[in-house]
Length: 270
Image 1 (cartoon, rainbow, N blue to C red):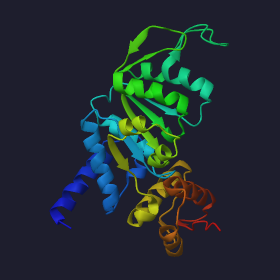
Image 2: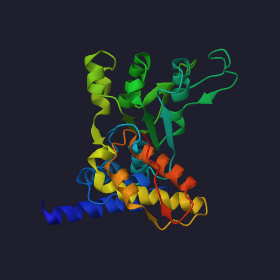
Image 3: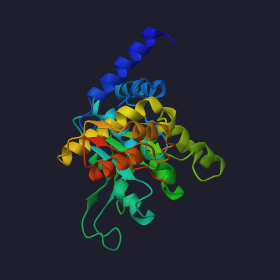
């Protein structure tokens, strides 16, 4: 590896991390080249308005990366909104995304603007995009390609300027092959993919991440913890972490909660 290139990559990653407004925990890194590359891609994506597809297992920090792209972009003063495509019933999803007119359906007692309209000149994160119902996919594709939509119950076309970031832990290419995801929408979303590595591929980052969470939870609980016991740290660094950063964070919180001295002993799950 080129030491000069590595140094520049670290500087890029540090810049991305330093400019985050909220908790930067999942962007903490030590020397993980895969995560440094992800940070480099964050800055590239932030500088341009292209659609971004964030790929990664559950708990790898996809939403945080999306927020980082927004905060580092020219849209940072405008709205960032998130829609979880798997958590909203299909009969309500279209209204959530595009809004509705009064009387558009039973219970629509007022006009309502959707997330795209509210995020005009800002950013929309479509989380769990792999679970977007097939019936909604052509409408999303139309917004991406034409920048326009109609509210439910309205024939008037609204134009919108929104930067779309999609995130998924699904294999969208496989979804296309199985006719569960439209190929044209996949290609439209996959303009600039960013893959977030799981913790097992960046073990050098686990120790600083764990200590970050310990310090944060100790501060919140008004506890004084000076270090992590060596056997506990060895367990943490070498665990599989199928839930990735979220699982690590939850275990550190529970361990700090039960800690009774300045040396933290991590609860080792079966």
